[in-house]
Length: 435
Image 1 (tube, rainbow, N blue to C red):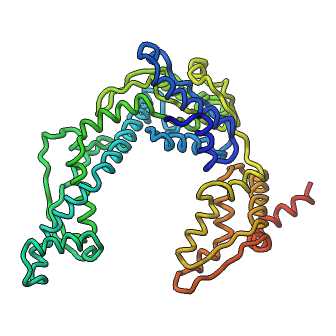
Image 2 (cartoon, helix red, strand yellow):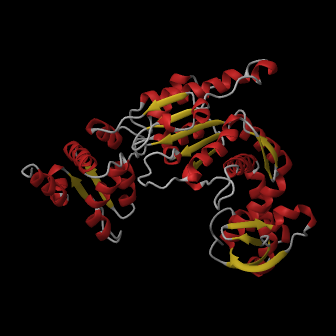
Image 3 (cartoon, rainbow, N blue to C red):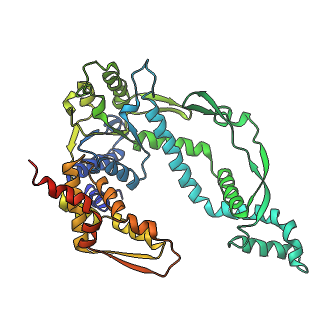
């Protein structure tokens, strides 16, 4: 059973604080895909996704909402920046490349799923190959045992890490060469000519652990049907793909800060339009239709408005949601209520070096207060401000921790925060007396 909109929002709440309107919009868009899939084909072909524009400052969760949404339903996902594209006739990326990037992401997604399905068989085949490599080298160690017994022993020991650090000579497939076309563009000769080019092997000395990893990858490739992977990936890209277009506000042509016209900005919008409207894009795996892909655009819109986009493009993004700036309560929840929060991440990282970090409630509240002050008085970078503050807060501990000492308990309280962020707090205390 597919997730209901409420269940989708509940899942997103585990990682993203607030922004209920945006979560609701993407949850409905996702559920509508499931609803559409249950309709008769004639009606299904008429229904297209309702694309979304997310409007809000940086660091409030726009990208994270889209990324988590795609991960939730294992949908092909790609994030692109609108500013990377230029109008046809200018040097820059072609807008159709966003669809090709999505197809590549879809291929990787499906291939990894197929590899997971054949993992056990691939490991078994890889170990059998390694047994053949090690057998002549280790035979003398097991004098008095039959060849079959030696192979059984080697197979069992290869499943552990006994031989991982030993070096062996193995034959591995040679990677096809990359041929440069022009700066920033390369083509893979193996992709171009496929089966026409014979696969070459080369002899190489490496650790047993590395040989095992390469053999597993080679055996996995043998066990999966890439034609099936490609067709499944194309279908998923067409029906379930999500393309996140960031910095859409930067191509409105408004608020550029200069008097000279930027001929490329509106041109990029017009080039993106047919992709969003629905068109067929040629890829090396075959043609791909964009009619049923979900497009989520995002931008801060500080210097421009959504209405500054060309009307045709606005019409293809019927849903606009505004994300709010993060406040004190939001920062406290981000540090305490999200799964694998920043606090948990730093506790785990320093735990590797025998540092047992404990954050008091008053410390978390003080960190949140400093984050609000910093965002209000300098550039508002949203939740990313917490990374800056905690990195500075734990700088001395991170630098001095080495792991060659017993477990050290460190309590982070409000006093510790004030002492280590004194330069920031002093700056804002002074500002209170300056007109």
